[in-house]
Amino acid sequence: METIKLGIVDDDKLIVELLAQFFDNDDQFSVELKCFGGLECLEALKQLDELPEMILIDLKMSGMDGTELLQEIRAEYPQIKCVVISSFYQRSFMGYLLKSGAVAFLAKGIAPEELKGILLDVHKKGYYFLPDQLEIVREQLSSKIPRPVLNSEDLLSEREKEILILICRQKTAIEIGEILFIAQRTVEGHKNHMYAKTGAKNLAGLVIYAIQNQIINSDEIIML
Image 1 (cartoon, helix red, strand yellow):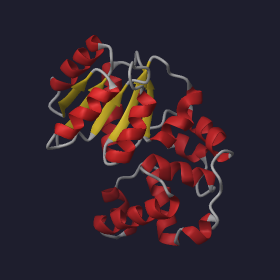
Image 2 (tube, rainbow, N blue to C red):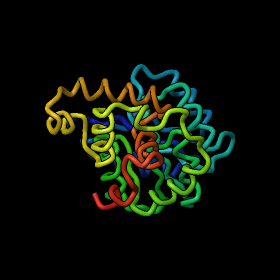
Image 3 (tube, rainbow, N blue to C red):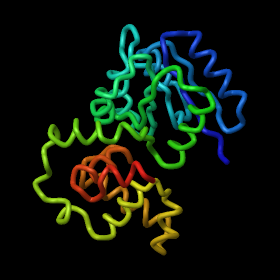
Image 4 (cartoon, rainbow, N blue to C red):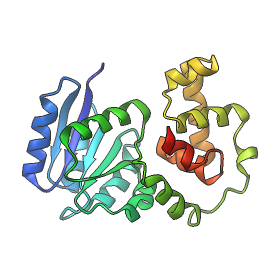
């Protein structure tokens, strides 16, 4: 398995160092970025030759908080997967954070081994939802995001909807290709078309779109 390049941003230096030590002791991860605030993170990213695949971000930080940092990273480095981990964990934040670019939202105090498992899941599938978060997402986003001018049947092709359903079922591009007997490159092409058509910024956004437009319902995802 390839090494996952990781960044950690938190104004609690002890947490940063402890997490860095934990992940550096695991051959599956390499901590490439340690920062103690949002502004420091943005400056550090400009200096890196190779960006981290994933960044752990605290919400409440002095100077620039986690929500602001999320938006900046989404605008400048959309390829980075942002995982929010905060002591200010409230399910009511979920919709806003996803719209801001987060692919997962976790509470501080999570066991390190569980956190590692979630990050491996994000690396493989692109997002991670706790079972109780999907209903909150549907409640928060379905009434606040305007419906597209075209309905989902007109917007997405039948093949795109097949692929979207499999994405919601946490299948990887390789697995989708095997199920549908198409090349992985073809799957990635369809995903890119869906990003352009729906305005989604990441796989979590595509899942939200699928729920909102009743291509799949949240109960199906929870059971998978």
